Image 1: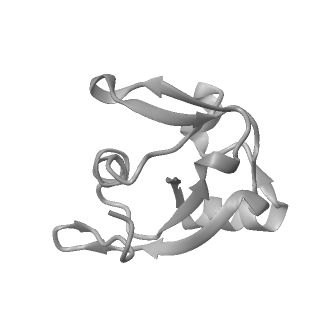
Image 2: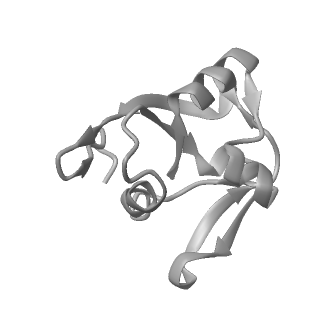
Image 3: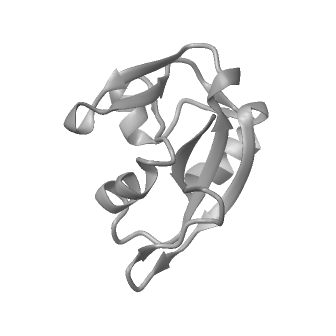
Length: 111
């Protein structure tokens, strides 16, 4: 199952260059890396990145991640949280996540 992480482009570039990351500022504050499922990612983008256009969406195979926990969050829904650095080798693909007139434009096949 693919899960998704949204990064600002500068965060993605730093991650790509370093080969691993502890995540975005919110991840550092919370002590784990936040992910969303396909059913959750559009709401995550709207809630946390509503006006941001230079974003990158990463897909990661949840079945290949150790230290991944499914924990209740928004509305009691279970969200995947990674309790270790995210490594470049974990990323299945990365694609731009532009902002359109009615919200973010997700790559084909995410939903």
